[in-house]
Image 1: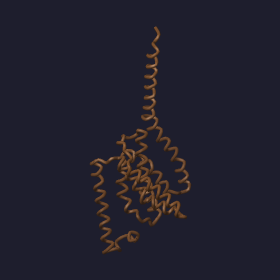
Image 2: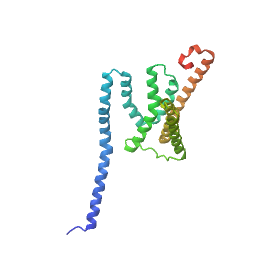
Image 3: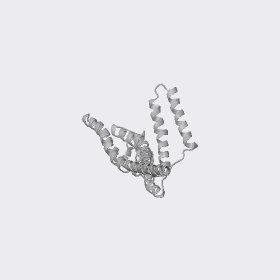
Length: 225
């Protein structure tokens, strides 16, 4: 006895749906978790070897921190804000190459990288799904302001690089941190972790401010401007 056509079509659709779901599970549960580390090792291995041969060990140090940073920001993105708040205030002056590299890593690279890792982790389903955020008028106003500022800099300044760096440091990085906070939606436990860091920074900067008035010789010369 032959199977009716509509039953055969239904059976084919069910098989296709199951196989599609299996392929998705294989991608998200096996290929991505195991393949991404291998791909990352290959991508990082070549430039890392070149930097070692050229003896540019400060860049090697940054590369070595990249993998644990990705793991940390994928697991707990709010850590980026805590680290930034704890370290960035003390990197406003960069008297040598080591301080400059730290400034690039902590202030310029880390907030944007943490936001990118959090968004990518959501898209690839390799981390806990965050609550989706709606981009409203505030975010569109931020994007419009940033675009207008970039166009003004490019149009009115013959040497725009320094102004673009300034815009990035003072506008784009805070915007990235704002979007990261919106994406993460910190809970009460996150705020409890943030409070000791904020209190420590406030205490150190208050002491530094008092010393700059009454005993400036006790402070590093670069802190005095």
